[in-house]
Length: 238
Image 1: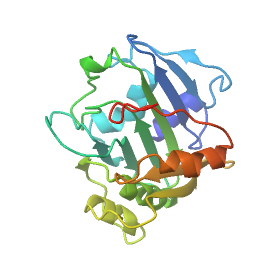
Image 2 (image 1 turned 90 degrees about the vertical axis):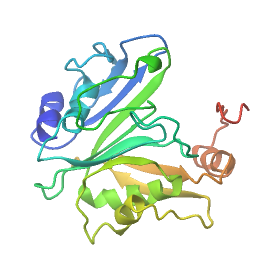
Image 3 (image 1 turned 45 degrees about the vertical axis):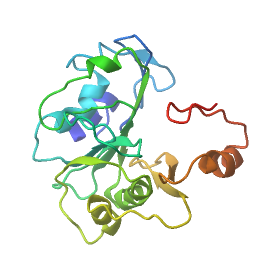
């Protein structure tokens, strides 16, 4: 993870942040990478191939084994597992470096069946016609349990886990063991920041499978002080 960070940010500190958007029916995307013309979006290489683009670099120790990276991968449509039923839409990867005191990363994305764990980079062909978002953040290990708490509400389907247990991360253990919090409230917020000295402060909003539009009407609209239009394939409501 450190090598990836330095290559993109020209820094010896862990400050890696990248946002990538792939438009429908396009093989390439637009990337916003911290430290590299951070105020402007840049074209990516072909995201469907294993070229040295930002998605591959973010996942390089997920798609291939590396002793300096242990991770949890979750996806409501996991790779190579057909007809799985889950009410969660969560997709992402949570990574730590077991050999470093405070090195970790969190990836959130929208791509079904992706990424495959430890078997190389494969972008699902069926997803090329769809638009997708990919976000990678380098965080401190101390933030992992707050993320795990938020994920417990969302009840993600975990298809790979080799992160060692740690008493300092009780929510991560409960997440892996499937101990979801199904009591009220049906939505929660957690606050984290990225690993840089002046870290980017973020708020995680998470809702349970029993929650419908409460997170938008009662939480996000009030926090953002704006109106929101929401559309989902499942609900077919805008």
